[in-house]
Amino acid sequence: MLCLFVNGLEGPQDIAAVKARVNFPAEVWKSLDASDKPVVMAVSNVNGRLRDPATVTIVEVLANVYFNQFGTNAIGE
Image 1 (cartoon, rainbow, N blue to C red):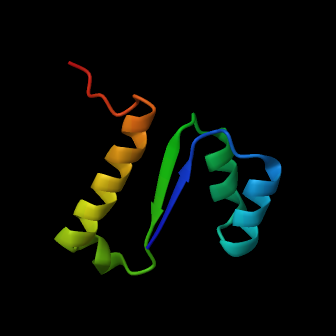
Image 2 (tube, rainbow, N blue to C red):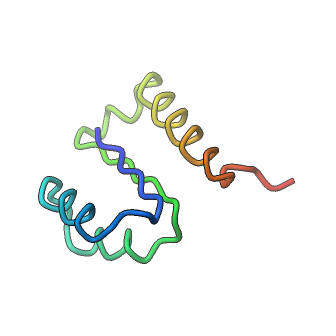
Image 3 (cartoon, one colour):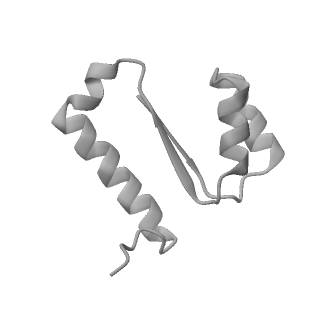
């Protein structure tokens, strides 16, 4: 399981360091670059793992805490 949090403040060296360690296809990096920031990307190499309630809860809590820092996790009323 990999969770990548990108807040838009990363410099080219930061992104290059992550790219050197994470082997995503080029189209994934292009999509990430084009996304509005902040953004979170969660990747799992075992599909069944995302059905595990503990894993789902952890991913949701991490994303909620991260986006709450930027005030971007509010649900429209």
